[in-house]
Length: 443
Image (cartoon, rainbow, N blue to C red; front, side, top):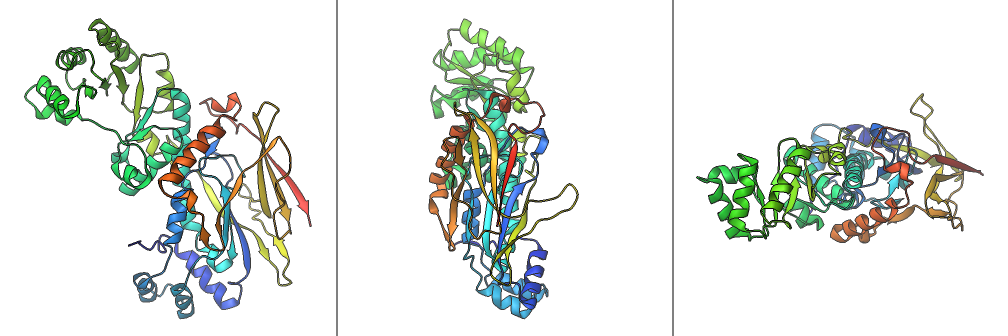
């Protein structure tokens, strides 16, 4: 049975609804837009993640008996609003960037159209999902770029809240990680899972050799043995002695990793275990991974850094009203004008401009000022349309949900990342790799 998500919101969403029902503006058609004014942490691009999760939560966005009782008992809204919420269903439309897409400042990542009443109360839910997941995906993409062809495993569940850990594993996989240690992410989203043993396994046994023999008996010779519980050199020697030269891998979780990895590789080769892989898993981030590029490392495991956005735990996105229907039925663009927090009004259509070689050159945003419908995609070879329909008339496109949606988002991300100019792949702080260019069409 689904769990209602309607109270995963801020109180002011419902107090605005309450007032709008009183003054007659609740039924006014509106367009809300979710976007980021800037990229967090001086990153050169962002990655959209969380869309498929949000759609599932939207399906369960209901005010059932328990939710209604809480609102009534605490006097949050009026009786009229209680009656409205009892029958709440989102019947509008949502378009947006595909999950896994690259975004830049001002990109209209999500466009929600419906009555003010049904669209405004989705703000907190949409932002909580996309801000978290996109922050993780952006950090994960940078790590994936730094790792090159070497696989990455997400191992950060113990560094995040239990549900955030699942969402983070999902987002990291979309952005280029190969697997996760989190089993719920595997069950719910189809993310490949991995894991063997921790230091507790070695400490449980009387000797390191006993621990290795037992692990191999259980998981086979192709397993990965954790060799740094005691002395690393002795651990490697014991591992090969027990498993033979066909040992699948060894894992290093401590020490000066470039130095230790080189020493372990030389020792494994001297022992004849030339095919044994080396995995490192010690507080890695994109910079540590990049520093290991020349080291004989075969794969990485990343925990804290990826699930916390590597220093930028939120994408900083906002959800703003950008157009509303006037009393005469026409559309009016609206925008916030506050210093440093201004927004651009109007319904928007977004394109990624590319040069003749397919390299992205700009984020082009066409603003329909006063138009009821966005302009159609321009027939230009150098422009790729960025938005897709996610919800139409309240009906969710299920292609974006579940394990299949995750797989599609991952494939899309890896494909569009190839469009980025080389400068976008650098890890240093800088301005966004692409400029955002607005083209306003007057009514």
